[in-house]
Picture 1 (tube, rainbow, N blue to C red):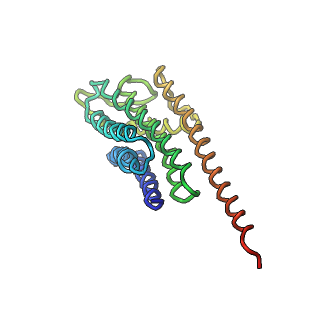
Picture 2: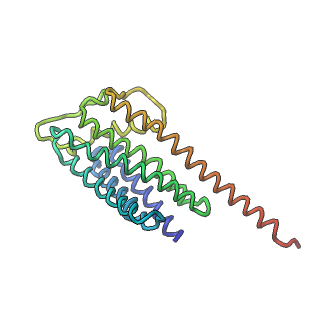
Length: 237
């Protein structure tokens, strides 16, 4: 069971890195959306099997994952003129990432020791917050054009979000700037809602690090103490 859980955490990190490929290479932006899909399905359809949550909570979590994937692809294939197509995406992915982070931290706390897979899963969870924030901010830019500036989004009659999705890599960059509380100032939230999302992202990053570091340090200290006790109990020659 531990080996299976470790493989799931490694896959989560792998899919998270696939999402970031499209940000570095705009021609491969389609890998980004495939990566988002794989992340949502891994969290809600694969990793949920090892959950100790109530059955109704697991079913609701599974349904949320499917809703998030469907809403993302509908948003990508929808023309810019239908500005409210991003609302389901923003809501579903915001709830999904919040719920997923809570489940991941609980899972980390249940791990018997700090392992390579655990560290990979913790890294993936942190990156997941940034990636989801970027996706929500991108949806917000289509709901309220001009939410972030300076940003040049080419909009034409019938142009889908997917056709101009390479532009949104800039917003994803800004999301990680907020997550790490760096604040370069080259991109700015211009409207009240975009500012609120930016502030929420800046708060979520340090909170996640504090929670996960507390769990990892506590687990490491517990393992170290157990090792010392076992060493003292061994018969001396």
